[in-house]
Length: 182
Ligand code: FES
Image 1: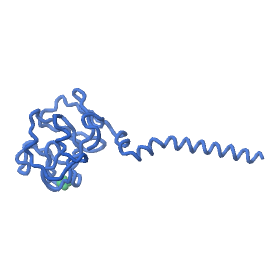
Image 2 (image 1 turned 120 degrees about the vertical axis):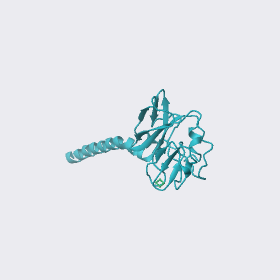
Image 3 (image 1 turned 60 degrees about the vertical axis):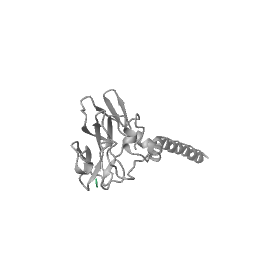
């Protein structure tokens, strides 16, 4: 009788312990199951843009990935770039459609072909019609300053991280004028 009572108490303690362990792991498991939650756990990077000049790119890192912060002149014309057909972002649009009206923004600086880091060429290249471009030298990928594909093998534009502008700070990783990774 005494033995079965002890067993019962041990079983109860065991179950409580297991329940506590599951409860502690729950947020982690939940985050693993929901990609949006994983994104929310990521780093937030604040970039001071007060000294960023038009056509200048600052390189930073977001979630361990090279990230470009660029300022374009207010009157920058993106319409006269000839874009590669069908190379659209996860919203099914060009990056320009997402970013127009925002002279300062961040792009993930990793080529969407095989992951090289594109070079910023504000003076332009032949393939970009002499207009400012991000050039990926690995296999000849060219992007507009908005990260849309001009030429070469990249299948889609550069990724746009969630971001918001607060005074002179661009906050990468927080929902603002871009709400999610696109
Ligand atoms: S990795 Fe950039 S073009 Fe291939």
